[in-house]
Image 1 (cartoon, rainbow, N blue to C red):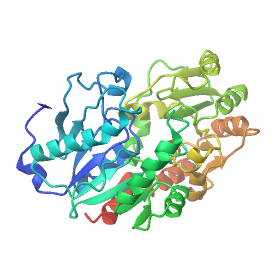
Image 2: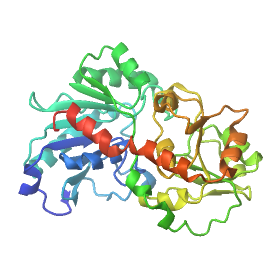
Image 3: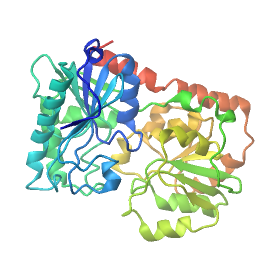
Image 4: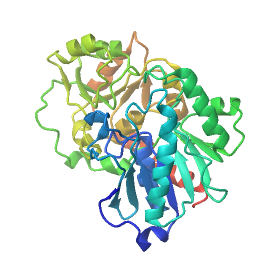
Length: 392
């Protein structure tokens, strides 16, 4: 089994260790898991467990993981060790799926032996059966970053299987953290009676603090006003809203990976428009260079159960960059309870984007947006998370 460099040193033994069973690879899109784990580095070391890969995993999902048939354990930061577990080919499908969670648990135990540290908690932000297996002195934490059941159709998964796996996780969890009140209500209705905390997604305000000094991303010359979407482009997004923004006279900058199954014909037609640019996935550290180019940020989500239970990262990122925001009507927007996010339906979405994009950049409004985002920083979210699981 491969280790990039020795990891069983004393550094990891001086602080609590969190085993973080993530829903995305460390090298993937910087989402909720990635930001929360980084922000918790002030309190604990983290053993980050990627989703498993197999010889059949497409390279775009393996994110550079080696093709050797055993797990890799790599120290990435003094506080962060990354485990990339292996699974059998077709591990998400029946009848192979029942082997996946036991293999992940086995490889986590191997990693913990190498680290020579017993964890304070195991955090699961997915439905692989990894909770309730570590003894009474290890806290089992279920971290609900999405409504997994509502997202089953979106991800092409068996809804009944996901419902069963969700109930198993809830039964094994000691405490829970969720990003939205609708998800908290769902888990309470399913019988979870342990401590549960609603902690919406946050924002890395420092990444956008000196936006004026950041050079814009090169090679993008779009006429104003420029509306932007940052994040994954999938069926969560109503493509008709993007079309309406362009029809209203805005340019459109799309930053993020795209699900190939999402509106292939309409998407190709959209990005062929001379006032539209799609730059694909970008590392988190480059996002300020793209946000500098936009005049208004868009959260164009469809009205679905999955989206109503989510808390879009992009909304707070636009605000942290001082940009106005147009969003569809989501519980997350109501939770923020601010006039700084404009809610619009299909009939007015494009015109709202154009109006806000053409409005003069008021220094006072920019400061208000940044101040609002600062109230929802990942540091503050991590402080609350750490208290909830007993490491602060």
